[in-house]
Amino acid sequence: MKKIVFKFWNDILDEDYVEGVWAETVDEEKGHYKIDNIPFFVTSYSVGDIVQVEEEYEELVVKDLVEPSENSTLNIKFSKGADKDETLEKLVSYGCNYESMENLIPGYYSVNVPSSVSYQPVYKFLKELEIREQLGFREACLCHNREEQ
Image 1 (tube, rainbow, N blue to C red):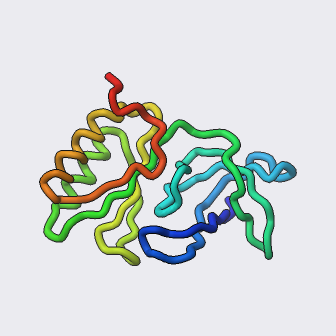
Image 2 (image 1 turned 120 degrees about the vertical axis):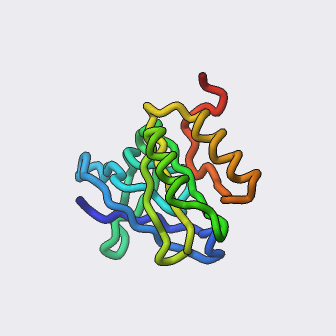
Image 3 (image 1 turned 45 degrees about the vertical axis):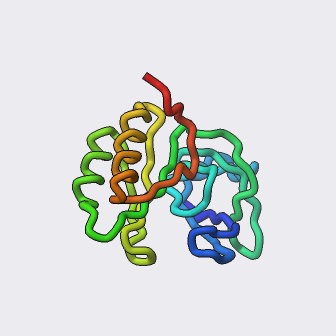
């Protein structure tokens, strides 16, 4: 595993940002790596995507998407008093997995919705919680169809 980085303007933290993710080498000569963990802030990328990187000042910097994984990435920010554990357990029951950014932003999580998971129930569940002001969420990388059956 290697650490690869995204360099971008982080609209959540309102600053230039470098986000590192772990990646598996696919083809080192071509600079192709497969993202192995859920991105927290970068948009348009998900776990399982194969990306093109270039070395810059001893860092492997993502330059392009080579092959999408078909997974979707959601970012969730829980409201104070929201039942995070119950919500996260429900997401896992749908087949999703998540990672926490509690150390930097309390209540902030990234969720991977695998391509094999039906997105409609996940979206409906989160939308209902958003309407009830339990959380806010964004579709950082949407490869699913909201209207799927």
